[in-house]
Length: 198
Length: 399
Image (cartoon, rainbow over all chains, first blue to last red; front, side, top):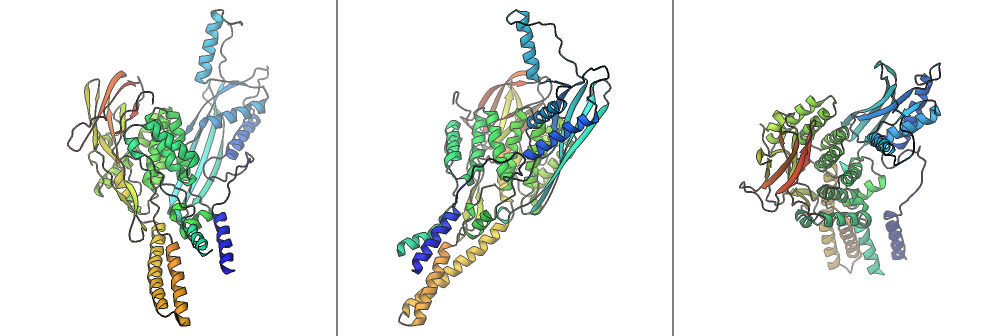
């Protein structure tokens, strides 16, 4: 009887030790259960929506009294932190949120190298008569440029570490070089190393 | 039934314990990177998930050798995420302390994390993102500072020097500080037994050159479990003929390479870890329990007619079982395809296309046959040209 109980107990222990895994769909705003450090999906989403709302509220990109729409392009995201990031995901999300916030009342320009290449190629095809369409439009000039920089301050001592991340965005007038808007997003994480990794 | 019970008793000790993936290092050194990448991909899907960072790092090296730069970056990035995560579940910690230490997720030693940062930063540089390259290096510097012995924290000149160069490349501040730290790290490391030179011209004139060769040379150390109960993690150096490199550009000598990171020194200066103390304690218990158990069983067997004798035999048997079940062996998993040193060669060269020839030399200064690399390289009008050339055979065309 004792042997049987011990056998069943050990089998249970084995099943628990080598238990099942999971593959679950979660909200993009859910806290990251894989690792709690670095920018998470919730940070990217919150940051983009906050910045878009704030730019709109400041009114710097509002149409002029004669109805002329402002134009801007997103230049770059500089990473000065100690965490590698996919800069495109932050800027793309921000661009989308800005587009949604302004609902077409601002001209967002695509100044990526690929956009320039595609524009030039299309113009050449139109010139050669290979495709239809007028070739008399000029590429839009920009009134403003939007830039971002991500910085971090990392502290580490013994089994503890903290990381403060600051992402700053700024909108600069390309005629006057005046910074017409800036805002930032902050986050801080703390980690403790397990004894098995010390 | 008793046999089944004994088998089950033994299983928890071995259950879920993870061994070093059997990376075909010889094939890698022989230049068949496609075969090793295939091995790593199979391990990635079918192997132990706890070893993922090891196989991703090996895969990344193969992808770099095969010219698959974006894929290599993704591999090193995924490995970096595992190696850089401090969070550990309570279950994993308990399993590693009570059971086998090698049941835990491999996250690498600080010297391995630093090497992951090195490769990842090079991949980001190839992508045209020196800021992300510097971010990887900064993270590597922080990870290198995780060694238990504070004396040896942050003594990796390679990471500091590269971080300084990356700062310059994307116009960030801090380059001077990184260069100064690189000098300090180099001097400290050499004073404490690292290979290299205090008057390393790459570090005394850190901004020099628009042409940089990064040269991982030799084969890095192997980790093994030592001691009576295999409770001690030790490193042994591995034999490889290449010790340094020379290069020619357009037939003109660029000189010899200089050591910026002695991987063997970095591995051997980790200091004691908390787990080492736990393993030593378990080893003492294992040995004591085994000896006490044997004595009790012996006494009991000689006196089986009495109740005391039977009790001694049972207690002795229990101690022997506990001793056998106590897993004391050190986790000897490691990144097996690391170089012995990372060296660099820097030069000022005119922009344009050039023929580059890199030779790796043995201890007697003779070029090693089969390791010569010849390639056509382009140096831009402005900016810098960086190339990673390991002391491995060039990848076969079409492989």
